[in-house]
Each structure stands twice: as structure tokens, then as C-alpha cells.
Length: 276
Length: 273
Image 1 (cartoon, each protein chain N blue to C red):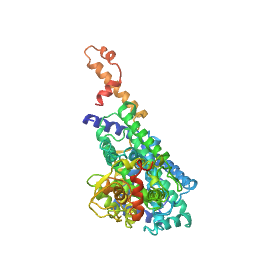
Image 2 (image 1 turned 60 degrees about the vertical axis):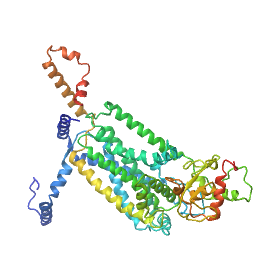
Image 3 (image 1 turned 135 degrees about the vertical axis):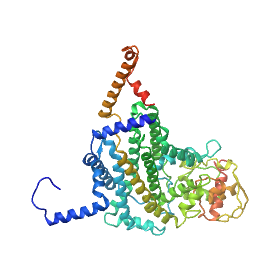
Image 4 (image 1 turned 180 degrees about the vertical axis):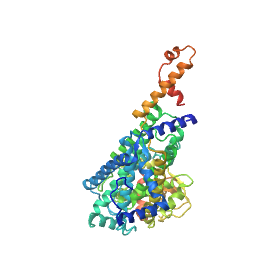
């Protein structure tokens, strides 16, 4: 393993190597992890390209705080409000966990939107990353639905009436609207089963979807590579070199020699043409 | 983007990677710095702005507000813009058409903008669209944030024409205590989520509904509901009287309350001003 010989390997090292070899032989895990970590990325990446990871990290935080909250929360119209009070007022650090879950939700929405803005401004959604964008857009929609379904669970006046109105809005959509609203509410009106239904959607259905799509999104990101900022020094240098080569070629080809160059108004015209 | 552009991009990106540096530790270190800062911010906010619990559902207070979390304010504001349902600007624009068109455009962005150019300075159209969408959403969110606060209990509306002790006076009490002011405005008092009701009595509302009313109210029988009876129907079952209505049903009111409320609403703008 190592290039320096420090004597015979101890039995612990040998056992460790044996375990790693056993797993690697069957899964190629070391190769996979090595590829993932050691693959090259463009030399100049922006700090704005960290927002996607931050959003994913907050999803992890939401999962952990959500699991803790689920240990105390009782999804029933008669007990939900009391259990929220209990978490907030009695449980040790319950207020902190609930506060982190609430602020984490806002942070996640902000990060997802900022991440989208970054991808848009960098033009990173263009070839070959179109499907990465589509999975990301679906993630954004799912994150919004997380907010919608989580809001009701507090079961106070604000949460209840806002959700009643949101469900009525869903039901007002043409053709399929009433059916979607009925499925979400578990009936034609808001009833005692609606709360547990929202709870299940909030903690099982959508998180499953988000986890799946984060997996797809990450797979595409690592397969296609992190995009390079379009104004990076390297790409500017490469573009200039290309333009110079194109000008040189035009000079070679031109029937009247150097005249071609003076007619050419802007070096950019060539790239603009190439870009069409 | 044609085949040649795609090949050119692939070649350029391969070169960028070749001249680049490994993902670990360079990208991972940056990612974790930002994630730690974000976590610190979340914990800081959780400590600084303690999370609160509002009054329970169906409590005695009538100051509920059907206001979503701030990240839905932009949709909520759209609803206010399109609340007065008519053929030209139906409320369905806000509840269905605009949100879904935006969602489809969002998903289709990479298939609409297929040019090879990535520098934002050379994409004036994309830049303008991005700025317009951002300003529009930020403005709507700000409007939602600073929008009318719910009316607290004890508010009165100065009316003329209401005799104390009459059915209309009782109806006004129901109107004020059941939280109608949270969404509806009458004579400048109340929210702006639902339609302004100052002159609703003059609107000549009428609907046909052959189903059974959740709370039978003497006098209010179908299938045609007009005048005060329409208000009974609409309060008990908003969508029965006005398809597509987003108003919550108030079927928990008593028959007397419903009748008094309907008398009050039906006279707004005519008898009670």
C-alpha cells in the first residue's frame, strides 16, 4: 500500500485490508468512491456553485429535525395542537429543534431559488445538462409542496385556515382539481383524516420523492461534471485562441489577403456565427 | 445548439477538466464552508426568532388569517389580483393558469433556450426575463408581507340603517365575530383576500342548487337561491353557489346565525350603508 517500507504489516492492518479487499472485490466501492472524489473539476469554480450542496445539506438537517419532531408529534386533530405546545414548551430543546425545522424550511426554499438563479445566470442548464435542470425543477416543486403540507401540521388557526383555502383553490382547478383536492383531504371536505394524510404526505411521500430526485440530480452532476463559469480565465483564453485561429484561417483563405481582416468589424462576430 | 456546438462544448469542457483540480478537496471544502455558515444561520434564527404557537383551531378568537407561509405569498397575491371573478380576468388565472404556465416554462427552460452562448452579458433576452420574473415575484412577496393585517376582535363598522336588536344587527355581529373581516372588506374595514362586500347586496346574486343544505335554514329552500337565500347557500357551501370559490365553508354556524348573516349581507349597499 505505502511506498515507504516501515516493516511488516501488523495484524490489525492486515485485517483491515482484508475487509476492504473483500468489499471492494464484490462492489468496487473503493473504485467508485475514488472516482467520485478524485475526478477533476474545472480549475475556476465560483462560490455561487456551493448553493446546491447547501440546499442538500439543509434537506439532511430537515430530515434529522423532522425525525426528532415525529417522536413527539401526534397527528390527530384532538392532540396535534397539544403536542406542538408540548414540543415547544416542555421538551428539552424542543423549541430549538422546532425552530430549526421551521427556519430550515425557509432556508431551503431560499437556497433552492438561489441555486436555480445561479444555474440560470451561468447558462449551466444548456447542453449537456438539460435533464439536470429538469430534475432540479421537479425538486423545487417538491420542496414547495413540503412547505404546503408541513404548514398544516402545527394545527393552529393560521395553519388550518390557510390550508383550507389552499385546498379550495386546488379544488377549483378545472377537471382534475376536485379529484386532487379529494385525495389530499381524504374526502370532499376538510375532515379529521386530513391531518394524518397531510402528515403522511409530508414525512413519507414527498421526502421519498426528494431523496430519489436528489440521487438522480447528483448522479447527473457527477457524470456531466460541474459547469465552468462562462467567464472563467481559461475559457476566455481558449475563446481568444480560437478566434485568433479563425482569423488566421480567414486570412489564409481570403482572396485579397490582409484585406479580409480589416473588413471584419469585431472578433466576436465569428463566435456569434459559430454559436448559431 | 447544433451537433458541432455540442462537440465543441464537450471538447472545451474536457480541456477545462484536464486543466482543473480534483473534486476532493477543492469543491468539497467550499461546499462545507457554505453549508456550515447556513447551518449557523438557521440555528441563529431559531434562537433569535423563537418559534411561536398561534391560537388553536376553532378557538373563541376570530382573528384568524388564511395567510400561507411567506414563500407562497406570490401565489396568494395573485389570488388578490384576480379575486373579482369575471369573464375577462377569472380567478382561475391566479389559481390555475398562471402557476401552471410558470411551472411548465420552468421545466422547459433548457429546451426553449438552446443557444450555445453561456455568458449572461451575451444573453440579453434571458437576462431580461430573469430580472422581470425576479422583480415580479419579489414585489408580490413584499406585497403579501406588508398586506392588510387581520382585524382584531372588537372592531366595528360604522353603518347607517341597522336598528339595534334587529336581524341585521345580529347578522353584523356574526359577520364581525366569525372572522369574515379577515378576508373581506366592508366600508374600508377588513382584508383583501376575498371580494369587497360593501355593495354586495346590489349584485343580484342567484344560483341553482338541488342538493341538500348542510344546515337547513327555514325559508332558504332550493333549487333557485336568490336574495338572502343565496347568501345562506354561499355561506354554508361556497362552491355550490359560486363554482370555483376558494372561501372556506361555514357550515358550523347555527340556522339563526346563517339567516341573520344573510339578511345583513343582502342589505349591504342598499339598506345598510
